[in-house]
Length: 404
Image 1 (cartoon, helix red, strand yellow):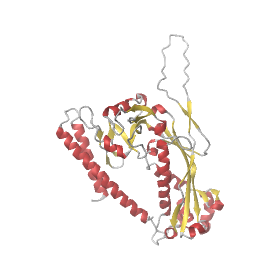
Image 2 (cartoon, helix red, strand yellow):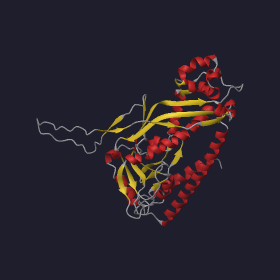
Image 3 (cartoon, one colour):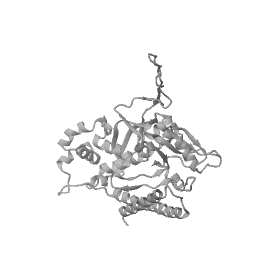
């Protein structure tokens, strides 16, 4: 069965599970309903695993041989070679010495020099944009946070305030209005220098014109920088690294003794209700937890014995429905802490109050000295300056497991 067929099968089962929940909403949840629901969600979990394995095979195949459209002569058109990506491709394969006269003339307008004698250049905007966009799909935090791009990397203090306690007043005729200045504070939104570590590319790949080098390098950068930044945006300490959303969030619910590994239905209700309704009315509040915890939450039931997890499904580009927990959307992030004593394994709230700041552009260096040439390789090293912080701690709350 193809991966597309697997996805279509999963969507069909998820829709059936949702229909079962909707059709019995005002009725008693029977053992027969539970048996059917367990069968459907069990098959969904099995299909999720098969889809993930099939996707890994496809990714490995794509990684082995990246291809890009060529003209009928098997070469790139001159117009393509003079584009930002075309110039980047030539620079990646052969360095500056490999440029044509037209490419050389355009090169310094496309890639600004940082340490040219050492091979360091700012990645062209078209390549940098695609890299940042791809990072949104990696890890989970960039998909829910608010992005902020700055031209400089100077230290930045971002205004923060909680207006949920501020109220107006009734005034008598001709009475003086009372002053009530918002209590603004600030949180640091500094950036930190991230490195992809050196990416060694075999010369054979660089010599093969059918290999999409831009995609190859971009994938490596995304994997390496994406992993470390998502970890820090999630649980970073704020000292020498970004302050993670879990670190910055405030307490919503602490499990009772004995819940070092478990979560109860009442805990989730308390966590949800700990976030002020003013945030919830904005429509951006959602749960976030790891994939391992999802297995536990899928099995939870409310006080009437009904499942509180509603499977999501896809139906085209914009249609479909997301996974829901207690009627709220879910965001998966495998850098969230796993259930353990005192672990903060679940957060809930308006995660757009977490701001991810990217400063300037991505910088890429190329190394073809003897260290790499002797191994038949060329080295690439990317740098990126990013930071993050939660600007309103009341917008996001966490569930913490008990100590014992």
